[in-house]
Amino acid sequence: MERLLGSYRYAVDAKGRVSVPAPFRKVLFPQPGLSGTLTRGYENCIALYPPDKWEEEAQQTADLPFTVGNVRLFAREMAFHAKPGTIDGQGRIILPKELRDWARIDKEALVLGVFTHIEIFNPEVYEAYRSGSGMTYERAAEELHKLRTSLRPHDDR
Image 1 (spheres, rainbow, N blue to C red):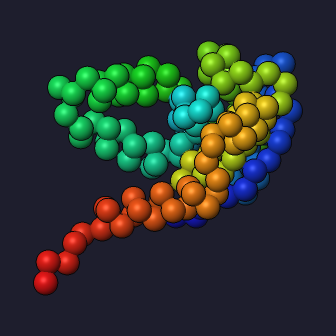
Image 2 (cartoon, rainbow, N blue to C red):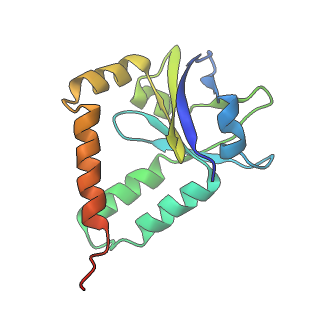
Image 3 (cartoon, rainbow, N blue to C red):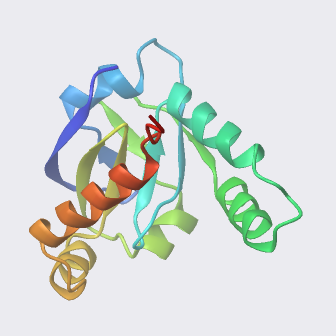
């Protein structure tokens, strides 16, 4: 699978449409007529998943034990806010008002490629998140390395 990388700033029109960066279109919408899925992302963004990645996310969530309260909450919220996202002839997608309001997206959007999906932020919200997270790129890399190491199968030889 091709990776979705980079960031782009676009205007959001009065109908709530935002451009999908040209390099992202063929990954998100590999065949005409296919819809991606828009839903709430983390840190007040709108996440847009291509069909295959959405199915993978949905299946991984469905495979978790629904008897666990946080699993139920996450699954319900993930599904409740999910909406189809179809690209128009000009390469734009409509961001549903409910999701725009939640993400505080009004006139401008920051579209980020995050390897397997895209995240759409209010640029000011994203900057506040980056500067206020208390995490540096280097510290995040260290934490990720620890996580990867802990998830690796252990060699018991």
